[in-house]
Image (cartoon, rainbow, N blue to C red; front, top):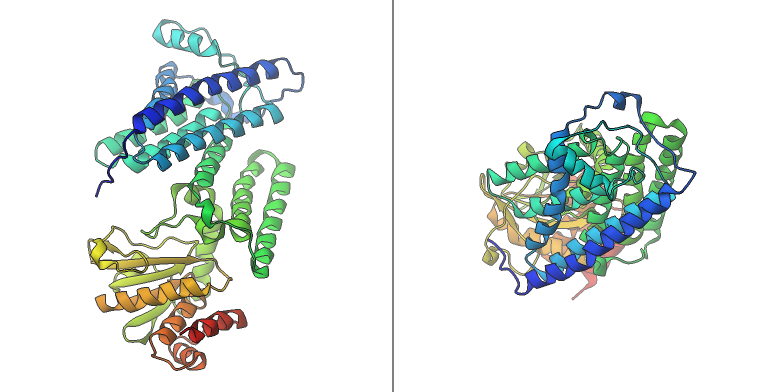
Length: 452
């Protein structure tokens, strides 16, 4: 169902453009002029880039980002979405211009003289775009932000495929117009996705971690990030790709220290946001492999009672037998889709259904290695009790041994199926012997069981 558009958004978008447009040209121009007079300008060029072709016609998609920049302000349907989009663009501009000043690089290829329309477009471009502002590419950073917004709003085919194709062509054009070296592209994409991730978080839910274990886990990930960063800069060349997993681990550390489970940006459809998926990709691959390795001898879910199963986060084929899923995993996607009518949702967590077979889904994401809080466990227990009526229900987390076991224990206690925590743990362990309920988990569950 399409969300109704809030009134006054066109005027709000125009006001943002009137602010961002002059600010862009002013900051970009001043950075160009300042860098042109410096003596410490370097370059970072890979040998294979000498074979990069010059395709003059790609100046058209290169220029088109200016048009798409303006059109992007027509897409938001709420003031919040409009403001977040504008602030994301502004943050990218500040981040990239700061990079130009702190790490000045120069484009080193000499472009031959070009005539006709394409030559004229290059001449206009070079009137204000000097070869000193390279990494991170502001062009690519803005492309990532605009592409993300268009992908969210352009759903109909063939327009969606056409949009993706044109956006990809813009990305290629920064190289085929000889405007940027390769290093500018991944660093620009990184800057863009960081900005999208930053403004996609719910800051009202963020806060300094009060659980010591969260700080310990955050420190471990931060140390891993620091080691990878050091190796990347020592190795240089292809070793710079290690900055990707380094950034991934740093953001995971930030999630544990400040952002919480919301920093993974898992939505009510079981998917991570595009920004989280790209930024955290190295970590996500590792987390998925870890999930499969720990459970390869026991991949199947186990029935605890009354059609409620406990297991790891499923593959799509493993999810198929279940009518509903309650998911406690924040860091990995779950294969479900499509929202169901609100009357089926009730007062608890959001329910989602896929077309074939009909499958309901409730997300209660929580951090790995950290006991869920009592409020979340109560929500998860209510979702289990509600959705189990649809048929066999899977309660899952990455491994199916701790977070999800905690949620099932909460359900057994709150519904009176077990008289106390020991009874609940005994029942769960009979079904799935490998569960891990540490003292911290038991403490939260005992508090939950003591509630009237």
